[in-house]
Image (cartoon, rainbow, N blue to C red):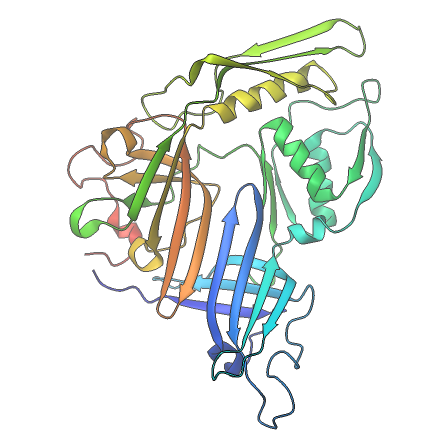
Length: 384
């Protein structure tokens, strides 16, 4: 296997840091997840300055609260990809008398920190959840990537009154609609994106993880957990605020695209009756029940490891990815929910979490059950 040239770029408040600071970097770790804010952890070696009167980096106040730290990586062919734009939330210096033992640990959170810092009390009348999400993103200077929600609240039903941070409100709205809320970083000089929509399962797979295919193997420690304890039926009951008639909704089938040929049933004996406090109308109740049955069908979770050198790129959350070489049952298309990128000299390791709501291949993966045809190794860079 030919090594790919991997480079990374660190920017502090949109500017490149000094060579001294770059050489002091011990490690960088970035956690991305479709269900929570991205986190960046930066570890630096620090020492007494040349005059012996202070500490490099620490006393220079290079990192203060809300200092912006951007991390981009480039693989072959060269095209920088932003991993995170984070804002400093925690600074931890550790001074040691041992040579090389002093460190500075920095933790930064993506733009969600800007949406989780101010508690608000504000009415939002006659607005769909998607309209509220769009406004929150624009107020935070993010590009809204928002799907329209099926229900729009009317003042005749109820008025959404925010009594939380913008981030907490987005969490609640995403949960009741079966949506995901996360931030995708933009390139330097461009805004980040605010995402509020269902899992995007119809996107083309971003690449292929080869679990056990000889020299083409690019993933290790691949593990699959099949947890079918979720309910096979979800019900909810409420009262129509206009007519005072009872509303009953019961669903057993997911509406999400199944990522495989063999769908499966979850626990046939388990049903769930949802609490419906805060539901405004029948359409909203139906969306709440559908979201819960969709979540129940994500019974397969896979974890594993790879590197940018072997895979050829940084794995992206919120997109499908193909898995090959994991056997008939567990090969196929998965959805990427979380990735942790760990930078060390000459390499970027990646720990990933995937999920799936079906088994086996369905013919859309671009490869066959046997042989290497259709694997598309050219997209992985210089792999031999």
